[in-house]
Length: 105
Image 1 (cartoon, rainbow, N blue to C red):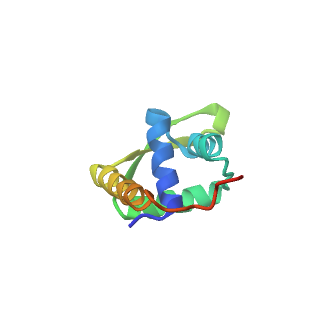
Image 2 (image 1 turned 90 degrees about the horizontal axis):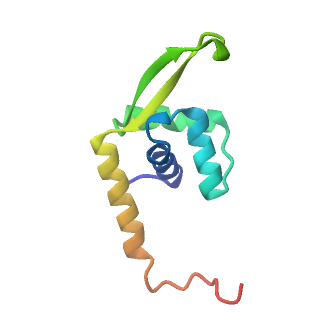
């Protein structure tokens, strides 16, 4: 079972596509959820997801703009896609008929 932070990170990777690295993942999350996460939180979660074989990463080319450091690009593994799909489906199946108390706000 994925936690909500893991779900956000996986969805952000899918949204960013081939350009999914730390900053673009953070930007996707902030733009679409309104949550501002520290880079440390994002990278810790990415490492955990990689340890679980739900994402894979590859190192890009070093660039002068980054002081010779390379970006690390992330993508979902087939297992990561399956876990995300199942996790979101479970939430969707639980929501119908629940009174969230949002009426009148």
